[in-house]
Length: 331
Ligand code: PEP
Ligand code: MN
Picture (cartoon, rainbow, N blue to C red):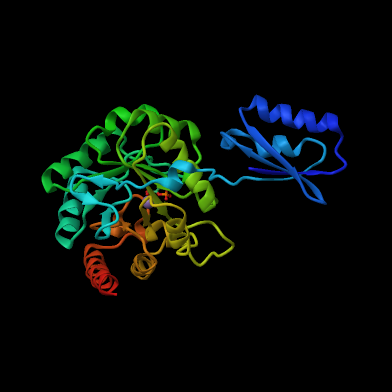
């Protein structure tokens, strides 16, 4: 960390700044140029609040030279689910927004498997904007999803909205933290400390990629390094789509971390007709996989039917993604 301090600063204030750093376990190398004092601080500078330093009289600038998310920045592992490895062939997670019934989730599971999906999704604890909307089947929804997993062999992904639900997720392979909970720091910490299952961390609708990585860091710091990042669209002034799918976030994230990055063009666009082009764009931009909402009868879906692909659309999507991926590999 570099601290720039005005030349006119009194010796008392310089001592205060120095004492503050020492109290925080920081060692300082002091130098100066013709314009200002230049202090180079080393030690656990991540824990030092820049704002607190800026509050000292005379401090002009505090520049951190170490990463604010060291674990996410230095991650060098591989996130795996059984023999599925994120970072190899694109992982295609497909299924309904919500688990609605045994018949619905079983039929969709069988269909998406046949079409080439690698994993099954299905929401049971649904964070809905309106308290009057369908809230999900809860534990029963998880049980039905797990039944579909047993029938098809597809690993499953489902969203958690509160740490008290964790006990129901024993047979769930990936735990999703949705956009609305990306900065639910107590949930992130609990997940980091209490499970080693991969966490699918979705970008909040008004969050930067930096904030997404800091949220990943919350989980990693507590001991769970199995994080999959997900771009799912952000809120902008544009109203033609439900969200603005930030394709550039994919290569940006990949330049900042080796954690896998997947894309959710269903929530990213909110319209089924845009899911295939945005899926292609995401894979071309380097995404390691996709999470796609698919329904056997989109017109009857209890949530997000307008963005759900039917089974033949999903099947065509998988064919296109496989062709595109072959071109990428050949390059
Ligand atoms: C979902 O995946 O069903 C969901 C609610 O996603 P998001 O958190 O991205 O809105
Ligand atoms: Mn949904």
